[in-house]
Image 1 (cartoon, one colour):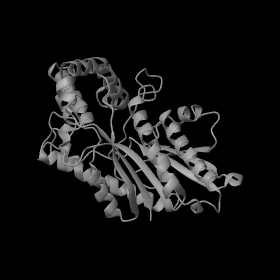
Image 2 (image 1 turned 90 degrees about the horizontal axis):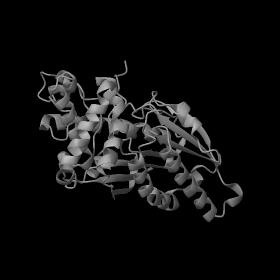
Image 3 (image 1 turned 90 degrees about the vertical axis):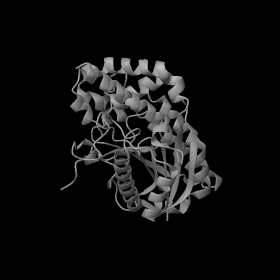
Length: 351
């Protein structure tokens, strides 16, 4: 029997706090990685891997509903076309097939309605968790993912078990918690990244490429010093404030943990080494913009509001995020400006 998995639930697209309306923060990470992807395709991609079919197959994993996914896909297609033209293959440019993947709860209808009308590729939707197999063996030439591979497939059971030393009482994340809680999240992420890489190793052709961008933690830095996790910590304290007021039950907070882990490059490198099917071509820290208080608040509501609504009910959202914004106002300079803010860009080549 398959284990139960969790999905990061996004706000409905009609919501003013929908992800597509409030994802400029993530878009800038895509833009920062564009040059690295173009360079990698130019220098590392062997066009012979798709010459027999003349069809280049791309998958964007954790695509959500746009518009960021369309920008990322177009960057890849432009780079492949440039490579082919440079090699004087202009008379036989490949056709492109793009697979947009996300959880089954994703609004694929909205995604398809939003497809660029002048796109030069065939589009398909592939629902399901990227922690397992999604595609036939050796069927993909380029896999991409942006701000998704930090997601866990499930919350470690012990962090919501009151009898466990790793019980995460009064917190919604691991970043400023006990060593036992941190180790539980680390172990779950290692297991999930292994599953992710094992699945992709089977799906990507030999010589194919995979690139992903994720929020990262500088090597040797504590989890509590990560910029994005400081915001999650304040969100958790805002939920506890509501519990103290009697608006929500404190046990509800104890049973709620964000299914996200922010890795270091050393942790990613170790997973690739365990897998043994990929070469690391690039692993680089990209500077991560520090958004304004308002932007950070709305981005967090867009990205996390759906999960909070599902667990606590939507009626608390306005008061919760008002509290969070006040905490940002009070502590932004002292708390956030000291945090480490990077994105990790990783490019792998299938052996």
